[in-house]
Length: 399
Image 1: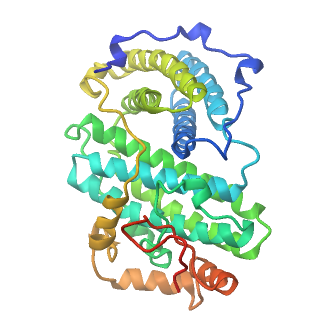
Image 2: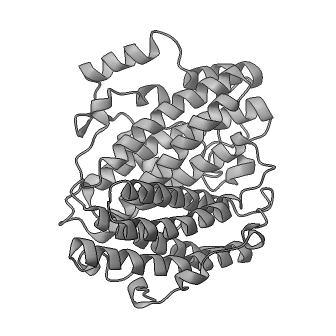
């Protein structure tokens, strides 16, 4: 069934403000929830944070008081939505457990988008980053067992494998090699624009989470690992934000943000297994439809263009959280040795990459390697979770 949010009318804006009672949502049960419910929550939190941040930046770059007021109203509603979404996460979950879930969300989100992306250069950008986030999941899983004596299986529930990707020590590149060529806004399909904004938002939220979580850890190895992977997430945000055409106007970006929120809330409402969370996705979709109409009006008035000239005629097929094990295995077999050079990808190290490696590692073992050394000392092997029947028994330790 097709769904065109521009043909729908959602909840009137003057009815969207909610009371404390309405914002006080009950969190999910981490021990009994669908892992992909938590992934959807983490993804939508990143999407809402990006929407709020973008709205602030737009407000700082417009002189029209009436526009500032409209943006302030929409932004306050978005902030309420973000609080509801993020507060669905349970307070009993540790920061490391949330970290494992965040990496699972980024891995399966990016894998699905890479599989569905029609543009070859954008698809390659997602595949490249995917193998690095996959490795982050593996490193954190080893840290999780060391510190909390729990296995990542309790979080990912076997939906996502936990095994080495492109080794994290090779993720540190010269900053110039993290900038990609952008899509051309007048040539790229609407789905490609939604994909780029979605992955960027998810990576940006992960980066921010690690920036704030790392120094709250007590264990030296945890502080170091969050610091290292937090720096890599900064590279990833640079990598993904450079895919967006900087020639898009503020108003074009605004309608893309609002349309993307409609797309994701609709997608997640179609597949959500928790009835209570599903009701939140449906409510927020009802709100976002009106936000989209407001953004379209602003584009018509201030950009002089019809929003339909840049938006999809209807929502694409729903974005789905699902296992991507064979796809990831294929990428591990074919793209593990890639690094970046200028805006492209190369199979061999080059002078600028090797110089950056020396500068950042300084001849020392990086935290991403040290966590495996310390895990091996504690458990006589590394932690992995591989698919039964196809690969070694996940209970086996690999030396």
